[in-house]
Length: 489
Ligand SMILES: O=C1CCNC(=O)N1
Ligand SMILES: [Zn+2]
Ligand SMILES: [Zn+2]
Image (cartoon, rainbow, N blue to C red):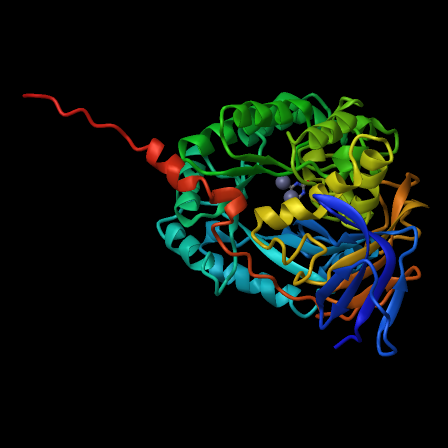
């Protein structure tokens, strides 16, 4: 167990307030937050003068060590969580993807992911489970895996990747009904996978084989239409819905529309979409362009990144993720001559906290409290682990970052901790640097050095029925009861 830690002279920032205070940590828990804490000889002292003391980032969207289409993502649970803590993130929610189409149970897939992650993680993690087919046994397995013993409270649905991950509308509708019954959140990758597949065929037939074909096969309205459809199906199923990687204005507008209709919809932009645009797909260098291939694609509109940040400021979008799904140049080159074979994925887990500070706070669009909300607290609330996570308060886990808002760092593959030969944010200078990262009371990053221990991170059970998501559910359910008219024969 780490020695007691006292963080002195810092400014604590939570999503609802910021104030000067010292913080005392014992046995991995915050035990005191007060104006002046006397440092005793047995305590390790951190001087946080002119620094912010913030809740460790929570990245709700990663794909570490993910097997897909014969490849495995380069950031495994060790390198991926090392990159996370080096950037000020102290918890990830990774996507478990059981091979359900071929009969693997959700529980067996879950067990595989746990066996990969538990020995390697250097910070805490949770799991969200993808459902890639609606089978007779799926509903029962969803009930099992949302029990506290497994600790899963969200399910992922892909409306893209026809033939591998994509579910039909009727399947997603049925599964959303089950999510609502179990008080579990439906998370959706919203793209029209069927139309994308046809557009890919047409583009290849016309000789468009490079990464520019990827973005042309997925026009922005393809994401907007699917986002709208996902919200409609969720509303029909009376199921709260969470749209992952919101990349475009149209998708964000669809979310705002359904929220204005009273639906419970959460939108998750990602670091890449808050800092970059789709011009990279037209880069003369094939490999450069291929390295930015992800789905949905980066927006073709250079004004989108700022708009997405403004929607986060306005509360129309809610939390930031990364979709960290890293493939190196060799893997990306599998798509030479056919863009549909380029593995989809980019990095983000190490740079999200700095990118969001630079594009949000340093640019004057959000304040530090909103920053904590969109990088940590809202994720903790949605996944039902608040205030254990996402807050600097007595009783909360000591997942803490000593954050220097005035320091800058220039992002580069030369210095990052990803297991990757490229960084999509290469050369971007950010204000806002995580100088010390503390995971459950243990310093895991300081003085530019990792101090991680593989397997020291813990699996965090995510329990169903998050009040932030479901506390109005019963009343909503009653209002949607079907009506029967009793007619005299
Ligand atoms: O939905 C996804 C899976 C991982 N990679 C990506 O780009 N999109
Ligand atoms: Zn996705
Ligand atoms: Zn993803």
